[in-house]
Length: 356
Image (cartoon, rainbow, N blue to C red; front, side, top):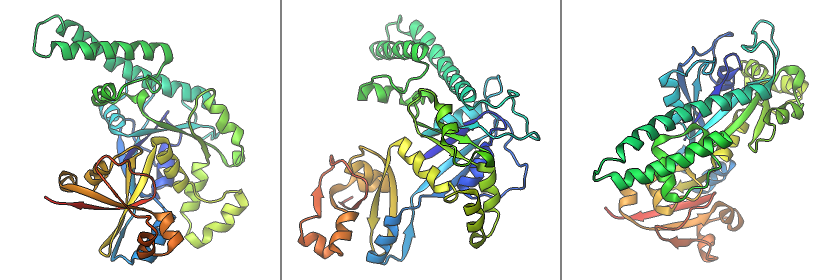
């Protein structure tokens, strides 16, 4: 799973990337416009600690979430192709808007207005999608007039893209367009940016810590998650040794560093759940979209396991807590056998039987 961090220049994207990934760079470091850098973060999950005590595995592997820092995208010019491709490859977007003031780092718009900046970000995403749509629709309108084996298929695609075009021009985004499963599959190759799930972070200054209104005001009437994060302050605290951070966090009124808060907020925005595989060799957490079937979860582990899928042995971590051992879970009938079409639920331990 991958989340792209986007925003106007000097909004603090790279600083936030450093906070999330724990990367340490010299003060003043930034990502050049259009450049892309990737960091991987282990997803903290207290259920893993519990399972370790029960299973005693030789190896423990936490789920991983990738964050992509894309430098200075939107400056009134068309984004670089590499930057657009990085956004399209991402499963979701983390939009960073600036609320902090810093005379040494002037805002590209010459004033601080998070709501305006978010509008501009959304507007630029709109323009990228509109460009893709218009170019494809133009080609299809010519192509469907020719009697080819793909003519009916192209007519269906053209009708769908014209619906998308109307929705985009009316609403400004494609995330609320009512689509069938087949239509979603048809659109998947376009990876429209306004169709991706998103999370907004308002980058605040130390004088705005605890001010939730500054974050809510940036959203306006949007219905998405928003978080206020003083990225620069948190990055400075991360430079300290772990046992020295407590007093500084307390003085500033911070509960802690926002890295895992942002990780879990991103997973929530993406509607991602976690399942576990647990054995003596390895305990591992896996991330999958909500609604994934048992055979889909098997494919996440290995394509051969999905190909030879026989059945899934499933139990809930909470039942393991309640009854204390695998033996007692089975004795109380809480372990189930499920087939390929079973929809995996968050927090399940799954053992897949297969034959290849």
